[in-house]
Amino acid sequence: MNIKRVSGWVLGVASLAVLAACGGSGSSGGDAQVRVINATRTHASIDLQSTSTSGSTTTATKLVSAVGKAGVSGFVNLGAGNYTVQVTDAGSQSALATAGPSVAKDSSYVLLAYESNGSVKAAWLGENDTLPAAGATYVRVYNAATDAGAVDVYVTSPTADLASVSSPSFSLASSSTPQSTAVTAFTPGTYRVRVTASGNRSDLRLDMPSVVLGDQQLDTLLLMPAAGGALVDGAVLVQKGTYAQTSNGNARVRLVSGLASGNFTASVGGLAVEADTLSPSIGSYVTVPAGSAPWNVAINGNAASVPQITLAAGSDNTLLLTGTAAAVTVNRIDDDNHAPATSGSVNIRLVNALSGTASSLSMAVDFGLVANNVVAGTASAYKSVTGNSSMRLEVTSPLSVTPISLQSSLNIPSGGVYSIFVVGDAATPATTVRRDR
Image (spheres, rainbow, N blue to C red):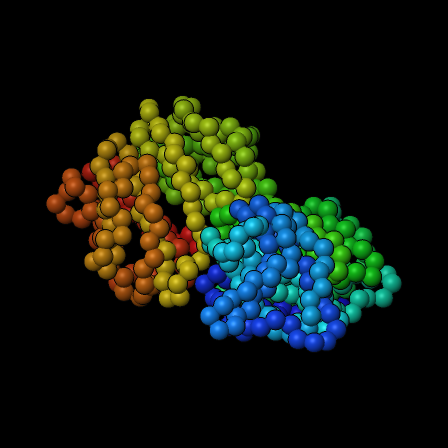
């Protein structure tokens, strides 16, 4: 059963770069209530302040103090009216995110602070919907994990096989801004919540194995960006009730072998990632448990020496194999698959996976240098460039008077993240353009 009363629930979303213009403190009228959720990944404790400006003087009033990471504050009273509010680190006056909500009397709100692409954002959400009758729970999804793209959300019994589920409980299209679904009624009980890429049940982005939906409650499933951009962190917010956060315990990793020849296998903690794959090769992302489980890599059946590799929770990673079949080097590279911060742009980098050489590489996009002296086994930093349908991409080496690769009229639309891989032997290198997001 769908009950469409979601309009107006999301009252405001702001980031550090978008400061609210409305000001002033509350006016007369009945009090409202507000509480704060700290869903950030890197801010241990946050405050919520209200600011007002008179002439050249700005006054800050602390509303909520020291909300710990993954925590929620109690409610505080707030007079009805228009506000400018700021999220700050605890004890600081520097705004991390700013919003400009309008507060109605006798109403309740929550300020959700979360992180996306390196910045804190704030969503001001109402908690004023009618609750269901006995024997039902209302559930909706608020998706702030926009970098993950279009997703499906399955709310099933804890033991259900997704292959046997007829359709998602909720589907959310790709969007550059957070979005919310209508509410759906469920029978109270314990459920498993899984988030997948849209239309791909095997591409699991989040697994919450035990979510209790209480009788006569309205529960919001909050989806928030994980560290790498593609995976998702989750939480359950009970209207005017509890808040419980589930950080993603997985990471995504792909194997890239720059070796000119040979077959390789790879596994982590006993989980196969690549099986008898011919080099050179650029693999697809595989979801594995985060942490420092040992990696086993073999080339032509011979075990490679692999350093300890730690995969951060929610991260995207590339394991890069270079060298020779007799002496393989394995390096982990951080992947950032968040959407570009600037409209109309793409994020692009060069990955030097050449084997058997110490040659560095450089790359120019539309005649502008974006990567310089990238040594084998490493990647350049991401650079933001304008997406277009006729991009010129040139990769050069100081060991060659001609370009390693020269491609023109490439269709590189805006909004994507790209890695340019150069693999194989220096004498016969191969260049591949891979869209990662």
